[in-house]
Amino acid sequence: MNAKLKQFLQRWGVFAALVVVWELATRAAVSPFFPTPLTILRTMRDQWLSGPASRLFLSDEVFGDVLPSVGRMLGGWALACVIGVAVGVALGRSRVAMDYVGPLLAFARAIPPPMLVPVFLVLLSIGTPMQLATIIFGTLWPVVLNAVDGARAVDSVKVETARVFRLPRHQWLLGVVVPSALPKIFAGVRVSLSLALILMVISELVGATNGIGYQLIYAQRQFDLPTMWAGIVLLGVLGYLFNTLLLAGERRALSWQPAGRG
Amino acid sequence: MPTMLEVTGLGHRYRSKDGEHIALDGLSFDVNAGELVCIVGPSGCGKSTLLRSISGLIRPTSGQVRLHGDVVDGVPSDLAVVFQDYSRSLFPWLSVQRNVEFPLKKSLDKAERRERARQALEQVGLAGAAGKYPWQLSGGMQQRVAIARALAYRPALLLMDEPFASVDAQTRFDLEDLLLRVRREYDTTILLVTHDIDESVYLGDRVVVLSKSPARVVRTLDVDLPAQRDQITTRESEAFVALRSEVARLLHGQPAGDAPTGNGRPSAGRAPAKGKTGTASSAGSTAASSAGSSSGSSEKAASAKAQPSRNGQAANRNRGKGNGAKSRRRGRARR
Ligand SMILES: Nc1ncnc2c1ncn2[C@@H]1O[C@H](COP(=O)(O)OP(=O)(O)OP(=O)(O)O)[C@@H](O)[C@H]1O
Ligand SMILES: [Mg+2]
Image 1: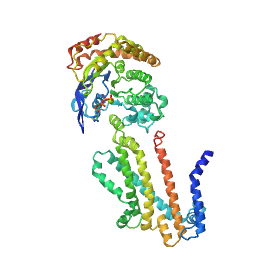
Image 2: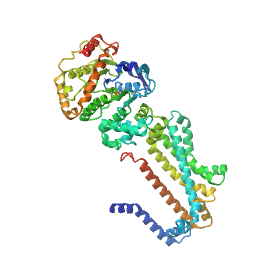
Image 3: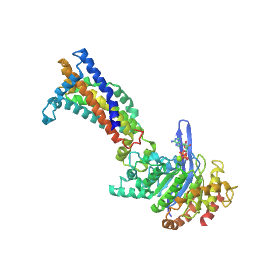
Image 4: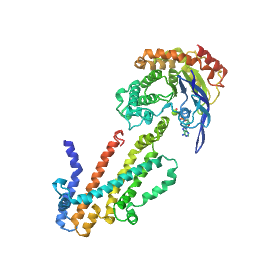
């Protein structure tokens, strides 16, 4: 218990100290552009936790903006992961496919994903399809490339073992290739998750009628800076939360790895 | 006993940037159903290449392999391999039990798979480790998992590539006896590759001696030891010592690639060098516990069955070798 407490303090001590410093600094400066952390917290509570008790105090904004944002982000990301793993494994296990599409993948990955927003905005106009397309297209490549890497690197003895036992195709792919590639796949999936958050916000800044990003840009235009800051903090909290959940999932999925290798 | 495996004129050359490397140079030998044949050859001579050609993992550049009379082209369905690098051949994301069950998924339902895996793990003495992951086991235990997996698959032909090369001497003796025991219980035909002379003689019904790279068959020897083998008494026996000396001479005594002529070879019955006898018996004494673990009843049944297989072999063995060698072999086979 004591050790746990110590670890907790170590982890959050610096963070808490910085918040306190920030609080003091913003109080001293009294700038409209930099509201104090307490003000931001209060704004966050008013924004999202002012609803009726029957809805766990969640306000309309949660249902109208936060959940749609999170839904689009996770939906797009999950789709990108599924497509990316499928495509990556197929490419990685093909002897010639990468010779053809390798440069294409390298090129696609080199495009900064936010540049996709204007393209899809033209193609699909404002709304959820455009945002999903942006998120999927932007987060796909890290998953694909890592899955290719992982699938290519299946240990040769395991390849021969699978051939000797004449494993059916699905068992070979799902039972040997994917597990072999899983550590790499998770690395790609983690990069994609943070990209998904970024793309969710950016696509909402320019091409949405609701969502956290929309709320953020709306507040900025209204010079409602505490609300803008509340949105920023919320995004940080969400990013942290999702990453933590993903890490926990990863640890579970890779629990078969010998200690010290993962 | 019918011929299970026929290897005829098998050759393989690897092509690489810096030219060609001939790994196998026209090997021919047979394995009969129910036999345990050991292939012994110097390190790097092409033993793994040979097994990979036989199992259909690589295509030979000349000659052919027949299993049950059919030319092997691609991996046959009733063949299993225990790889030299067993720890890499196990799947670290599957428990021991699931590793053994894994190849059975395509053919058996869940209950049958589980039962077969349980049985095979019990055979190799790993019933207690079924729930563990391979990397939680010692090298010798991992090797037993690989063997159990191959046994549970019930192959007609089991290929083993230096299966005991990387375990300590005691474990090695245990595993050798384990192999002899399960072989009888499962009635499997086994082709085992080793670079260890003693092991080839101890385990084999016959020993195929390979030359240095590129591999050729130097000679095929019958092992006329009682079917029931014992790490101490067998290794001390005159016949064993004579055989191991002969294999050693075939391996080291002749220049690489030279066709065996049989001249100048000392008789097999000659007493071996003192130092060698010493190592053999001292090694045997460390195996006391393992030797005692073989069960008596199954061995008797097996020895009754092993006899006919040996008599039928003299004819189809190793064409084109020296006459002296051939008659010597016959003499031994008839006893
Ligand atoms: N994929 C390959 N490409 C080129 N050369 C190879 C390849 N695999 C093996 N060789 C060469 O073929 C020869 C025989 O290799 P092989 O692995 O069959 O020998 P081995 O008898 O099994 O050796 P060891 O006793 O070390 O297991 C070696 O000289 C090796 O360098
Ligand atoms: Mg080898």
